[in-house]
Image (cartoon, rainbow, N blue to C red):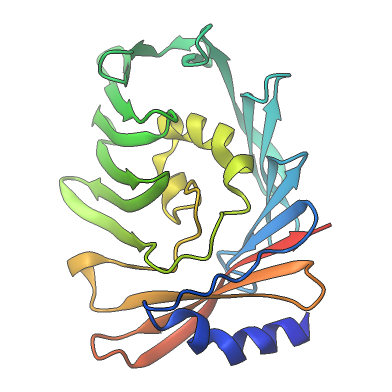
Amino acid sequence: MKYSILLLLAVFGLVSCSHDETATPTTGSGNLQKVVFYHNSPNERQWVIENNLLTKIVMADETLAEEFIYDNQHRVIADKKYINGTLSSTDVITYNSDNTIRSINDLPYFYDAATHTYTYTYGSDFTINCEVNSDQLVLSYTREGSNAGQYQMTYANGNMTSYAQESNGAAAVVKNFHFDAGFGTNPAYAAVLAVAKVKSLTDPSFFVDGQASATLANGFDKGTMEPYHYNYGATPDIEGKLFQIGVEVLDSNNNNVGFYSFADYYYL
């Protein structure tokens, strides 16, 4: 592990800093077992992958944060959420014959196939409208009434190219993802799709890191919200059991002002 981290730091500039880079690091060998995001930080999250499906999200101290239950068609039928390791709530999901979502917690979501839009109304309290793409992933999400907010996503070639979140009419988060020198296939893409379909309706902030993209991005910027841009550097370890992505933070003059770990992909 130590060798891998040192190797990542040594080659980071070679892999990430040039948009003309054409080499594509090879991801790990074997079956993906786990993805650790923001390793050794307060935001660390571990995605547990079993049979190529995301089954659990675990905190840094290995406390369970979320658990996903699937049916025999690999659709998420229950999303269990935990606080300090104790079950706090469960979303139960049912599906129509065309695999669109019919209800969440016995409350109906109406899907208009012509506009690719889900609509949900909870009395006079709030209304949700969610437009999805052909993969049933959120394009735009609007909640009116209590806890009002909006999300906008764009896609190209199976990749999320932008993510924007608004709160009280003002931009809260913006990310524009770059794929011009990407690192090839996203190892976790297939594992996360069923969860992402549900999160499109229940929690679009799940998409903030662009992990529902078929290809690994090579960086992102935050538009006019801040002057920095972020380049990804990636490398496998020498045994093919670990594939790491780090983030180099650059200012408007391309000076390095920081570095942090983004994702570690572990293989059996």
